[in-house]
Image 1 (cartoon, rainbow, N blue to C red):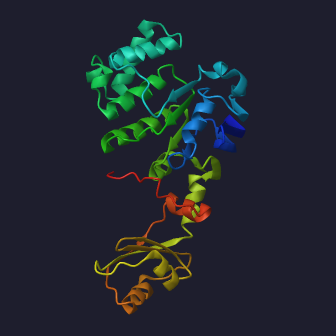
Image 2 (cartoon, rainbow, N blue to C red):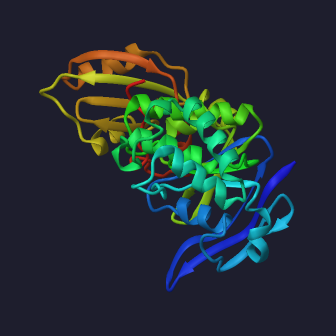
Image 3 (tube, one colour):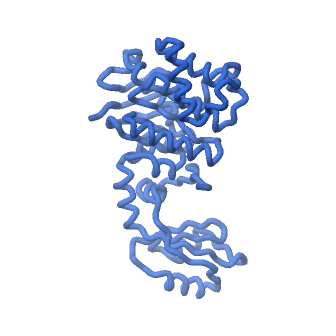
Amino acid sequence: MAIIEVNGLTKQYGDLVAVNDIDFSVQEGEIFGFLGPNGAGKTTTIKMLTGLTRVTSGEVRIDGVDCVRAVKNVQSIIGVVPDESNLYDELSGLDNLAFCAGLYGIRRSEGLQRGLKLLKQFGLEEAKNKPFRTYSKGMKRKLTIAAGIIHRPRILFLDEPTTGIDVVSARQIRNLVLDLNRAGATIFLTTHYIEEAERLCSRVAFIVEGKIRHLDTVENLLEQAREDNILEFVLSNNRVFEEEFLQKAFPENRIEVKGSRVRIHTTEPVGLKSFIDRFTEMDCEVFEARLVRPTLEDVLVRITGLDTSGLKEVRGE
């Protein structure tokens, strides 16, 4: 059952159309990924869905409620974690959580109790009495998520939850997201990390310049990826080819060049040797050759024809 329904959603600032007539739905209990480069319209969409910015046109329904006209009617069942923390620097971690609980009508004693439980769950118990300003980026991100779920919402909106934090904290936050989902929360997640969407989400929508370019399950997208064979070659350092030149040399294939590393995409089940022989004929030594498992990024490039270089990879894990 769809718990979020969006039809014709548009946001315009003067002549700039930040979000352009988009439609999608989110099923109850799923992790829905809203994927796109910086400036694509992800944050603007979340702000419209949660009533933080006015809708220019279109419809938003959350749990059947018309949120364009009456977003306050759903605020008790939604939690919002913005891309930048909205907590108070001078308050301790525990006091921040108790304060946020109070905004939802939760008594301070209950807020403190819930806060202590969340601090323990998020690995922040030892820092409960320290001012928020002393927290590391990863700690701040975790406490901001804790504040977003202090009232136990059914739906959680997460805007770029792991951007700008260290690898260990990012891994911890992704595990927390999965735990929240297993406990029954529906999660709307924006990210520009393709691998993050692949690991966490059941479905993804790919938005570029305010328009949704593709929407499907991750499973279906990766199934399409299996139709694509990717051969990667590391060439001798004294010979770096231009992508345009190699595209002419291999006209039946899609070519990617990054320095001495060349990727050749083909739908035919061809072997490495024939390509190595071609490079040899071009007076180029191949240092390394391997088959590469296609990723969600490869599928999105193929489907949309778009450059995804603005979508960063999750590394170090």
